[in-house]
Amino acid sequence: MGRYVVRRIIQAIPVILGATFLIYALVFLLPGDPITALAGEKRQDPAVVAVLRDRYHLDDPFFIQYWDYLVGLFKGDFGEDYRGNEVVDVMKTAFPYTINLAVTALVIEMVVGVTAGVIAALRRGKFIDNVVLISTLMVISIPVFVIGFVLQLVLGVKLNTDYGIDFFPVSFNEDAGFRSYLLPAYVLASTSLAYIARLTRTSLIEVMRADYVRTAVAKGLSPLRVVVRHGLRNALIPIVTFLGMDLGGLMGGAVITEGIFNIPGVGHQLFQSVYLRERTIVVGIVSALVLVYLFANLVVDLLYAVLDPRIRYE
Image 1 (tube, helix red, strand yellow):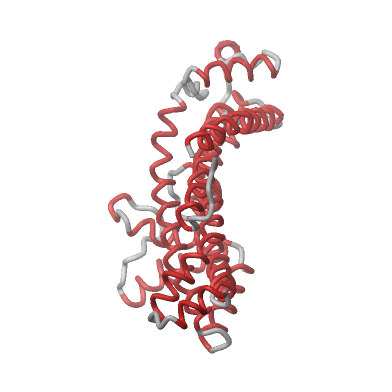
Image 2: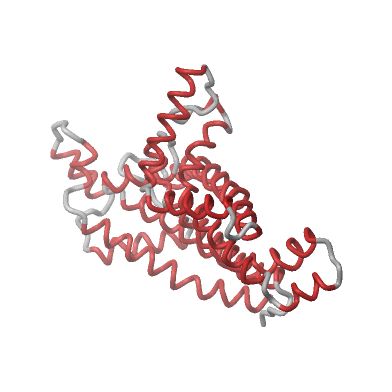
């Protein structure tokens, strides 16, 4: 197990290097000048522009700029943006919001998605099964931003104005605490939740046909124990795989949701940084997201051995 973890960590190094190079090159190739974008519509002093371009080595060739960034990265220095702010400080401010949002969305996916899938599998062909299949298909078919605006209007505005229930803030509010994350987390999790419900249903139906499940039933075990211990445990392997991959997707895919609900997280910061060509922030955030994605996949692979004792890593 230890050698397997070390091997996976070594394999992650070229992935991180490739991701940083690709993102750095894409931001470098964006049209426009970052110093001009920083000033907006204000008139710029040529002397100040020259000082800034020299300070951030903007006139150096691409590979020299990338090499300098990479050397700083290996020293733990993520650099600074064009306003002089440390990128680490920017990420420290933005990441907690996105982590809270992504973790809440992941919990909603697991609880609602798996529960709906189990109920649909155990009631296969019945009314509740059809409700789950149709509703999840509808959620998958509707774009996330449409779901966000509809829920924002119905639960955030109508519920408050018509019934006086102000439980779901329309936009992010620090004073509302955890309640501020519920609605955007559900919007962020909606599509994945639908996939998990359908995946759980299909996987559990297949597992419940297996011989060892029939043997467990023949031994007289209670239906709950058969479903949870022998059925759901084995059916969870593809679901855990999906959740592991989805964690990175939730972190990176929060751009739209954070924009709709005005959450000052990574997605919001990433969108602004791309617009302003703040390459150090963009590459720093993307590198951190790649690390999260790789770590989540490593945890998923290790969980396989927990869910299925036949799986061993050497």
